[in-house]
Length: 225
Ligand code: GAR
Image 1 (cartoon, rainbow, N blue to C red):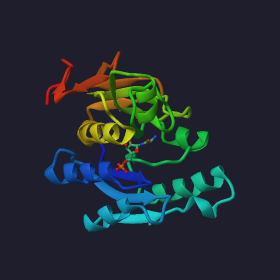
Image 2: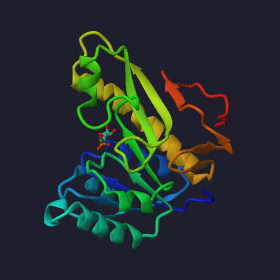
Image 3: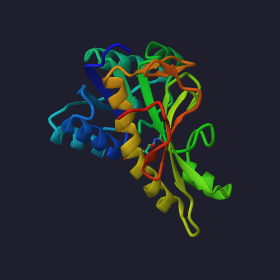
């Protein structure tokens, strides 16, 4: 990806990741502009965060559409009115159709609260607890048509601690999401990351495994921050 001037962020909920991205734009860690924040949920708190930051907001309410295809087309039309270089799914809780995903392949990121390929879909924290996992975390990945299946760029790993509930674990994970998502978007903004449906290049070098963010330390030699 040559340069990334403009980002559109899609949200459905509280938008704590959006806030981390807004903060990173404000501090200059991300050198792109957020052109718009779009929600499928009219009452998403994320919209308030965007407004407070002076960012354009819009709603495409999925309940007003009779099919996923029609919703996705309306969403795409709205996104395209902002001409973004990158689309960021940030707690956007909708399954997306293949034509939509294909249109944005290589220019759309998602963050998912599990160590992919584990626990695609919902209830990831409870599933990690039920499995007795000792580690859990979050993944930033390229979006491809199959749910939560595209190439993983970075993973934040946190310990599972005795007595954890899904809620406690979710809080531990999301804190790290707020670090890794702005980091990756910053790489895209600087043109350091090239993405396709089956490959990711960081600084021109193919990632053979995700960058690992663990206990505040990046364990990946290729990265010079
Ligand atoms: C985050 O934990 C994100 O990883 C998850 O939703 C939460 C949104 O929180 N996304 C998914 O589950 C997508 N499959 P936020 O609205 O506070 O950023």
